[in-house]
Length: 92
Image 1 (tube, rainbow, N blue to C red):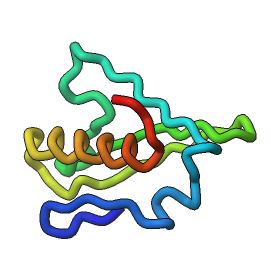
Image 2 (cartoon, rainbow, N blue to C red):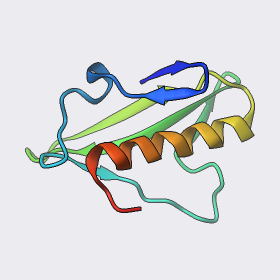
Image 3 (cartoon, rainbow, N blue to C red):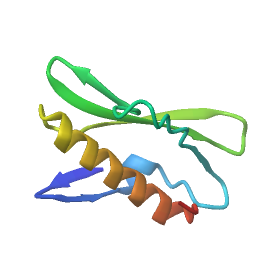
């Protein structure tokens, strides 16, 4: 994934040739936690998602959101989830 201006998009390196037929994304969202899938590392917000592969392995994807602003981090995280859902054809 790259941050270019305000556009988020995934590169083959960030999703490692995963296809909708082969991969499931674990998006367990806790509505009580506004900062789900986010963590702060030395003031910079990151997003993390777990990908479950058909060979029974899992991979954690982590993306620096390159911001110290929690509101912006939440918006970027939501856009990442939208991109993932679109890429893998997951119903929202």
